[in-house]
Length: 415
Ligand SMILES: Nc1nc2c(c(=O)[nH]1)N[C@H]1C(S)=C(S)[C@@H](COP(=O)(O)OP(=O)(O)OC[C@H]3O[C@@H](n4cnc5c(N)ncnc54)[C@H](O)[C@@H]3O)O[C@H]1N2
Ligand code: MOO
Image 1 (cartoon, rainbow, N blue to C red):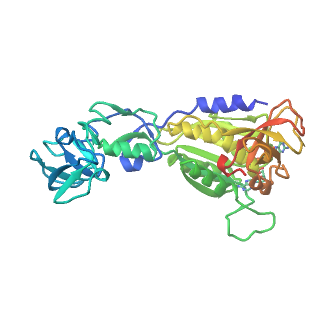
Image 2 (image 1 turned 135 degrees about the horizontal axis):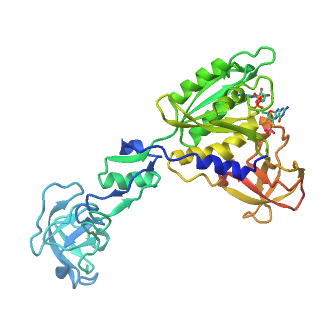
């Protein structure tokens, strides 16, 4: 059996960022820049006031104090968005608002709190050194500055900066399009009545949701029957509209394991057990779509928990690479075992566990099994907030042992 880390590394090595496309800035949110962005402008684009107050010549208020205020006539107002340049005559001031362009003739701003707030004339209570409360032209970004490097994830902060430097179109790696194919004669679409021997297709909706949560464009093809020509047709159709395909079911040793039977022939796919539980039967390959694009295909085991663990450990990191991101580094915490369990020999066990903050030290975590560990048992997957990673050589996890746990929920939600 192939070790988990080796399998993950082989899959990652077969994946590369999708070719860059140009998109309007607002469509780039959540994507990764494929090229450096240099600024063509200066920020701020004009020198402006950092405070609501009065624009003054510093020399005219040098002697001002609360006891001996300097009184100046107020010649007008300059608000943010003011059009047309203003010149302030010697011996006068103007009221100025935060973000308003600094008029000509003046070189400092006195905050309104340091005055009597007069509108016809104003008493100024403090001296203002030249440049006080000014945001100088180009003091944030200069023309030619590298504002965002290739590889930057366009988050809300990046959107703000790129909008400010007037980068209206940016080069990004597109959001990977993933098609999920649930295979199996027994599968019924959620909401449809179940006949004898049938179950609801839970893998399809689960993986479609997992992809969406991770920022990929996902769709699914429901209930692909265990028939070679149907599966082949659905796969061809999926390859034509996707950057990655995920199938579930039909990859172990059964007589109707169509996925494995069909895909073993072409030579592009490789099937084999990986030393893990759940998730042992795995398949992967890069197939060529009708238009010549190379599309990674992940064939996951049908058991729902096996499919989810396989997605987390193998598929999500590869999809992130397609998106131009680093492969995910799962958020892992160390936890102290409060209730022991057994683990299989020769396989990494991804145990569904409940993590809780230690009563004695909230910086530390306690951990216990979440319930039944059968690969079909979705209820314990939902009760769990983590997957303990039990190494290959460990067959018994004892009370007081320390285990590493991959979080299934944000760290802040663990109580
Ligand atoms: N003789 C052996 N049998 C099995 C082995 C083995 O090594 N030798 N491996 C077992 C392990 S481990 C796993 S995991 C499963 C994987 O089986 P397949 O990938 O071939 O999947 P299926 O047989 O099609 O289905 C397994 C199980 O999962 C249910 N299923 C399938 N698809 C869905 C879906 N979309 N939603 C919900 N549930 C689904 C299906 O009904 C089966 O119960 O094989 C073991 N057997
Ligand atoms: O690998 Mo299977 O996933 O053990 O049930």
